[in-house]
Image 1: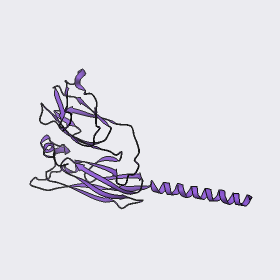
Image 2 (image 1 turned 180 degrees about the horizontal axis):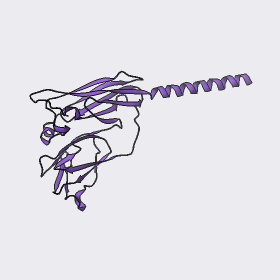
Image 3 (image 1 turned 135 degrees about the vertical axis):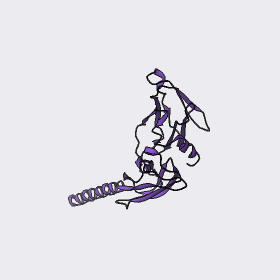
Image 4 (image 1 turned 90 degrees about the vertical axis):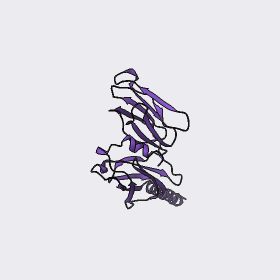
Length: 236
């Protein structure tokens, strides 16, 4: 009887260790790689192309559990009649707030098939220079403009995943500690079409080589002009 009890406890400990090992292995999967932008078309490519921001997001492809996090408030500034940052990716449930640093008024709005949204920003230093928070409660892409200044433009991509990062063209990205299996990689930049790629999260994976094709030349210092942004309205 005593010996049977010892054997049973040994089996239980062995099984527990195996389960812990399997659980650890299941969460040790990774997706990594490098994303770069290839420029084509009639425009010449200047030396600033490597500074173009690229959004990389990883979404479950098999219903994998993703970690929860508190909503993040994104602070966006309007300075020199331009919206900065001009491009970023947020998680569904985050919010955004605009702050005017210029000595002139701005009226920010975005295009939507639903309820329209706009806000008037008073001059810098006044009580109305900062907007109320705007909830980013739907996935997709929102394009922000100013009714007064044509150079003011920003694009915000909204995805339903905590696994997202912004890198520069030619720089590596990685997502670690993932459940294994099939995932969907979303890669986007303002000057190219958004790509969706099916990937596998495994332990020590070979790096991916992801390329985006842009048909416009780079902007000085990596800044996206309002006109370049308008041209991308229906590409996502």
